[in-house]
Length: 544
Image (cartoon, rainbow, N blue to C red; front, side, top):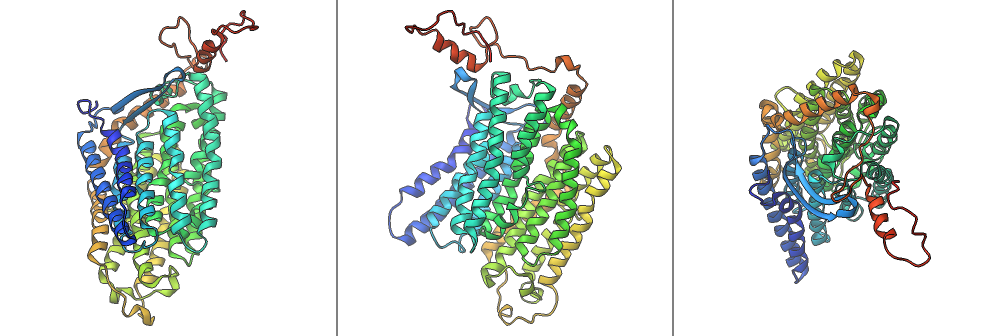
């Protein structure tokens, strides 16, 4: 299904780069360049959002497979192609990326005054990388987008961040890049074994059980850092504290979902035996993340650090849901990912509002803002309640479904995983009480201004989505119902298959009478060339 041949996914993916070229082509004084960069970035991101809404409207949720597929031959001899497509799991994350990008640009309209053109360029490039990663149906293409996200985010933290921005940016880059090296090795191993990097083929390729376990740890090393899971989460608080507000929004809203998406797209469906074998390990790490980071959040005196640790706890709930391997758990994980994308983004925007006015994130510096900022207090309350999972908001549905899925696995898993809801109430109400209530004693807070029309425009769509997801959840969950049911069914069938069938079937390439791996095929072309002194008895049909 490709909308009558129209390459809508390529357009959504690459259009931000067209806006980037327009921004780079403008000449003039610094003020002209800054104004052009802001408006071009905003209009480009809004056009991309409109196209993603068309994609969302034309998507058929009854189909479990990939839709809007675009497949262009690239490295044909090696089984690599430029292939894009979306299913029920990925289509809403494309929409999440395109919704948050214009919000980030609008939120940075007045706060970013240095190197505005480069800042907007970074965001447009990052939008291309995020959307491309969720649309990629080739492992090599996925890897390129997956790693490409690091560069603009590194620049956003390192150039426009706080006093310790260079330390935070380098730490972020090293943590995420180290795990990704193992992901590249896993990619090569799967390529050698299956003969292709086509994700739709790899999803139905059975790898040997021992190979699955090594691949699972390679995936875990990369995806766990991105989630982030305990104990490789320590880069996140530093990155959030030093990043500008828009950087924190896109980091919490989209980039943290990349690791969980990797588990859903690769680890669980491609490595069913290893996923089931190491599920207790994932449960243990997730429970520690939920309880430990929630307690750490209670001890924070910086607003951004508190919300950053809460993100680790919420993503721990997501990983529990993914590895329950049942429909309720995986659907709850997806709903929690989508809800956390909007709610955590809004909470960082909440912090950014007062930081732009007072230039401090220290909780003790505030108090009594309800007297001077009633609208701000109301908006803050909405997202605070959504974060703790109040019924009627988006945060409740995901956590409830994860607990339902977890209790089918083990009572204590559901109980300990659900502790995050109780501890979440503690640290979020603590934060809200310290900032909003109490007596207004600080002199500089007596003249603080309430939300501006631009800030209302930033928060309004997030408020609507928070209540929409909480009141009418099936309008979102219906998109991934078929895909999740198919994934669970295939996972169950793979676990029940005889062990002698769990070996990768080599790919039969067109025009060959026998199966060849890509490397063997490339070797055949070399050995077929007439070369003096070469032993012509060497056969090119030896498979590595």
